[in-house]
Image (cartoon, rainbow, N blue to C red; front, side, top):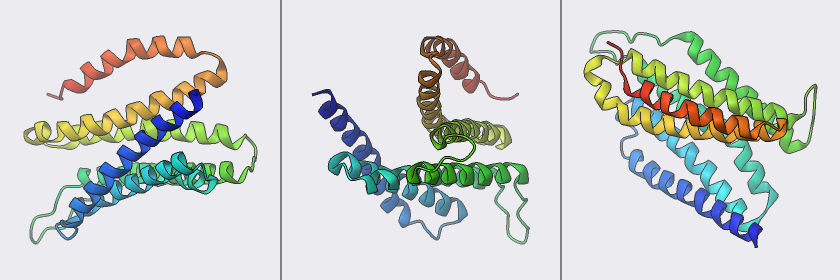
Length: 220
């Protein structure tokens, strides 16, 4: 009974994420040629739609191939939002002016995390363990990708001009909520493995109000 309820919850969760992302992808497809930022957002949302649909297919059919596809699509999903946030940090060039390059170290870290995350998921799907168990590498790579997503959001909020901060806040809050949920999910799995679940929940209850208050205060 519990397994059927969990399967239904998983199906609804992945289904809603996949369907909404698919509709948003179709909407953004009309502005594919509008600029680099529109194309970056289209790519990010399309990867989320792919990830959600694969998860929905696994929840409905139980086929391992869909589970493997969903796991392998997780790192590209992060990578799509990384690319979108990095594009937003890059000032748009005016006519006759070359664009200013975005910070190279952020892009390098994003590439590294996505490659490590995808490789770890591939090893876990294939059941191959190297120095460490592949499942543990997947867990820590997912934690690192969630934290780095929050770092990119903080960098975007700091680099945008004060006049546009109110316009960018909904995006920062929305993506920040996604990355915070991923962080809570993967840190909870890490806590279960280490047997410190109660301490982790207490730390989150103390930290979340501070994170919310800190995110609401802009730079002078």
